Amino acid sequence: LFRVFAKSDEFKYVLVRANERVELQKLLTQVPVPVKEAVDSPVAKINCLLQAYISRIPLDSYAIFSDMIYITQSANRIIRALFEIVLHRSWAQLTQITLDLAKMVEQRMWRSQTPLRQFKSIKSDIVRSIEKKDFPFDR
Image (tube, one colour):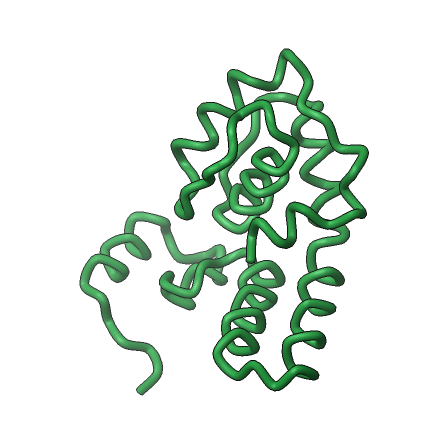
């Protein structure tokens, strides 16, 4: 789904600049879902920036940050449109996955993370220790 999102026609003018390659290479090692495209591919950049947005990975370059803002402004709308398409075609599993992705983008939190990440008052080391214990919150 990340690749389908990244190949959206809305991002056809997003390019990889020469000064961004080093930071993109660093981001590709930090994102949770592996990216198969090369570093100089716009699809890899878009995919990587969306995952960095969800993961709340800080960016160093202003140019990459501005591209991330452009991508994330359209992300929720495009992923909701993908959800509507797969829902209309009655693809149940893909509908669930797409809805989960839409929620992850909106909440900036991976599905595998604890819901306590939404609260800024809880220290990050406490949240990480809770996530390591794999405490189920759906009970």
